[in-house]
Picture 1: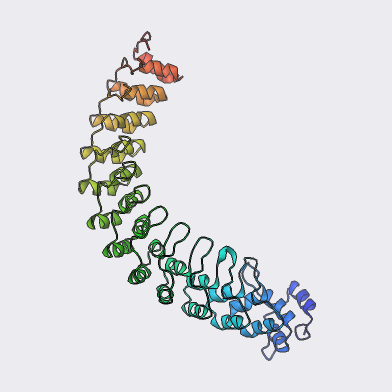
Picture 2: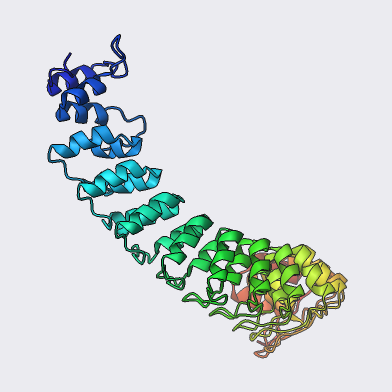
Length: 444
């Protein structure tokens, strides 16, 4: 009755006190149907805004757009309703219609003056929304009505980026046929092909390549789509890119190739694929890291074994002179150290120093069992025992002494292990060294 008589305040009061607006008359009319029949737009607004089942409360016109309810929308628009009214999140009813693919309501809104290129929060237009959700017919309608196909969000995404990232190949194809810029980049330099690769959307990537998307287009960090596929472990997209002559040795800004990235992320299938397609197993980054360095540091056992089986050199040093064995020692990767040593890696002094510094007893023992020289020195004549003493690694010092480490070894400056333990206040190690008869009168 309140709806029929246009008493919007009474309707509001009844709803606030639990009235059920879904109840119908004997003839099947709900309060909303009655209000619409009578042309009572205020009551229609109240009823629509109270009929939200979700947590987010939307304005009446947005709800009509969501439900594709043209009758309610027409009534609201007829009474001076702004077609571009925004919700709290900044979206217009046309954005909502685009999201749900509701063409009827979209047509009505556009006829009543809705802005087809309205930029909501973060500069998102209705075309971005329709492209993201794969609403092909809506995309077509919006373009016909003048939507800007090159519109960019705050982050630089075009509608084509949105469609490619979500894997909507029909929308990708339509946008390209309508002249969407195929090499447009986001603020980070991502092209639509990067987006398709990121989501493992093979068909979308294939369409982009068919339309001549540059296969080795790079981001601001010089990452290609193949780098992205390697990072995500997407074998199918990686294979497509390689089949289309993507460079398997493309170098990112830090010198990482797709193979380095696949090793870092433990993507064994991508590693196998890249090596079959000519990726260099000895490629080095700016700091001299090979793929084996990366896999060793990250503890990627299967990849380390695979690389060694394919003749990766375990003794290549970085710019700092560190081999894969050094990095494995630094990262406490005992199983990797075991594999590298079994396959001929040379300890070259420093892995034992590194393990001693970190206090990793198991790795120290492993290195010594594989012939590491217990008194090998650094360029400053530090032995592993010097390092253990300086760092206060009592257990390591004990193991080194059991393996014959020299108590009297001196650094370039003449320090013995006992000097260093005393200097750095490592009393437990000092006590251990004295128990083993370390000379107390050595000159340092």
